[in-house]
Length: 434
Ligand SMILES: *Cc1c(COP(=O)(O)O)cnc(C)c1O
Ligand SMILES: [Zn+2]
Image (cartoon, rainbow, N blue to C red; front, side):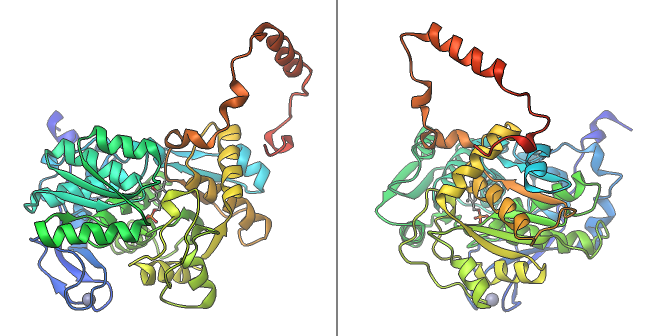
């Protein structure tokens, strides 16, 4: 084999776009938003027989761990000229201390905080920006709680495209700073993400900005679905028993659910599916409410409030898709309080060395609750999504405990005495929660 072939990736087998609701089909060769007939979400569709021929368990180990690994079932026609920053290929860590504490035989954490710009938004926006560019977009724009804006502006900078973002005026400072650093125009809106969406759609209508809103164009979900493909590959082409996913707009759940169907058609996995578990905030839980009511549509949540910016999404255009994935998989939807999220963050950091975002803390906390209530069993192989890094949220940590003290040498003695007198725990199960 020639050395240059070792890292060869495949070619996209994209064939068309199809509406996820009314099944109308469209050519994939121009910029699109939602279905022109019914206004619902468009999906990219592939020649999966052709894809299966090239994207085999034998071919994949020779490819790099990034999105191009799965090029056959991704939309890019020219992946080699796409703006990339090393997104994808994140670790699936064992979390043995949390597994013992919560009562699981095995618990895994998919560490998406390692993506460029600190969250899994990098996967979707790397794909959406690259695809927008190859279809001729000049300016990209997005409404965002923060992470999506940071990711889009980074890839736009790398692609040499102007970027406009609209964020709630109280979006985390680190994300606002990132967008400005990448040279984007930043609009701070006195409202929530759906208010930001109206601002961006007005700009798109007036100036032809390419609107990369969650599930309002077909390609972000394609980038996000690679999380599901990676997990399948990392587990040796089997799926876990449960996936716990902090859910805002739902791109990840929708994308992974779609990917699992594609992988099954390609013969890479069987018909078994993980229980898809959506975690939301008590102060903004439209999907949880709709799931409990047996509804297929989630009404807008009024007065949405939570410290997890990524979960402060009062209405999701993909509500019917999220709810279908949860129900068809035998999963559930659960709301977590802001206090529980912070406990979850602390548990992941202190027990596993993973400093995670509040959204991820919500997923950790939900894993504990679902296990203790018996919804999940000890032998359910469970994957928790850490969707973003805690480094974007240092304001949530009380740093006064580390204040400068004039009597530091006295403190050394106090800390030394405490640590040497402490009983070495036999296992993390004996440690207190905080
Ligand atoms: C956007 C975001 C979410 C929600 O993701 P969706 O796929 O849109 O539901 C969760 N966590 C973090 C850190 C986010 O930025
Ligand atoms: Zn339609």
